[in-house]
Structures are given as C-alpha cells and as structure tokens.
Figure 1 (cartoon, rainbow, N blue to C red):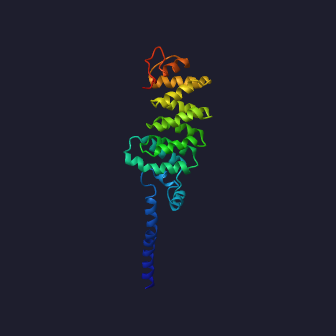
Figure 2: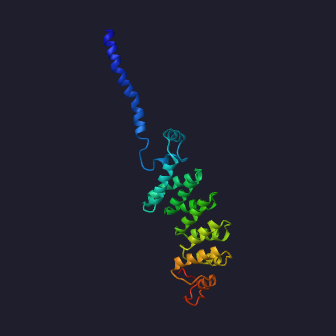
Figure 3: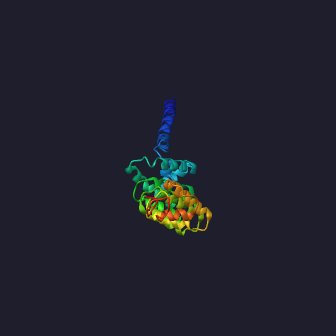
Length: 238
C-alpha cells in the first residue's frame, strides 16, 4: 500500500506543477499581444494594475518611441474613426509623459489626424517647455487646413521671443493661403534680422512659385498688389 501511495504521489506532483504553472504561462503568453502594445500600456490613461504589470514586463522607452513614430507615420492613411480612437491616447501622452521626444511625436501624430479636437492638442505644444516640441507644433500647424491654425502661427511669428520657434512658424505660414498668412509674412519681411528676411523670401518663393529677387521691399510691394511684375492682387497666395 505504501508503495502504491508513493507512486500515486509521484504521478500527481508533476500534474499539479503543470496546473499551477499554466495560468502564469497563459498570462505571459498574452503580455505582448496586439498592435502598439508598449504605447497603449505604458500610459497614464490606463490603470495602476496595468502600470505595475508593464513595469514587471520591462517595456522600454525605445519601444514606445518606435511605436509612436509608426503611429504618426500611418495616421494620414487611417480611417477617420481610427484617428478619433487614438486622440485620447495622444492627449494623455502629451499631458503626462516626461519625455520631450514622446510629447513631440504625440504632436506630430495629432497634426496628421483629421479629428477635429486634435487641433487643440497641437496648439498646446506651442507652450511646451521644450524647444523641439514647440517647433514641431509649428510644423504641424502648417499641415492643418483650419484658419485657426494660420492664426496661431501668425501670433507666434509676431510675438515669439525664440528665434527658432518664430522661424518655424514663418515657414509653416507659407503653407496657408489667405490674408492671415500674407499679412504676417509682410510684417516679418520688415524685420531687421537678415536671416528672418531671407527665410520669409524663401518661404514666399516656395509657396507662390515666383521669384522677385532678394529685396524685401519688392516682395512687400507685390504682396500689396503694387509690384511691377505681378498682377494687382491683394495677395500672392490667391
């Protein structure tokens, strides 16, 4: 009897070991399932329990940046409903992530989304503590069709004390047709800084397809509809 009991015990122990281990294997097997795992799960939008699980798994910042760059690259081609689905994730990343690069990529992705409320997120980037994030916000606003985007850029071009950010706004204004951009660029042409003048002229060349030389006065006259080589329009952007 003792020998039979011993054999029975020996046969049960491996089975119990498998049963006890199976739930762990099942849980781990699904740990990295689904697209954008790192981006979704290491995010304050999710629960603390998920945070702790992610810390145990060891999701890296490199993986998150890689996934967010992929998201930004594919945003334009996404259906509108999928773009809208990602909006709250992008908002949470921007509001809570300490990494300036993650915030910059969130602004990049938001700028490429057609979801209406993403314009407000892009605008927040104009006040970010990080220079690269502010510049990315300017570039993103250059890709937006809304008139408000042009107005935000015009304000930055006229008021920013940071030369790099101001220049990013000026370059982005060239992608917006209309009086808001025209008037802002005319004002920038009167800047005493030769680098700013050169940037505005280059921006106008690219946006209008015309070349009036390097004299800011010639461009200002053309923008006013007074240039000898241009038709009498109030704006070269029309």
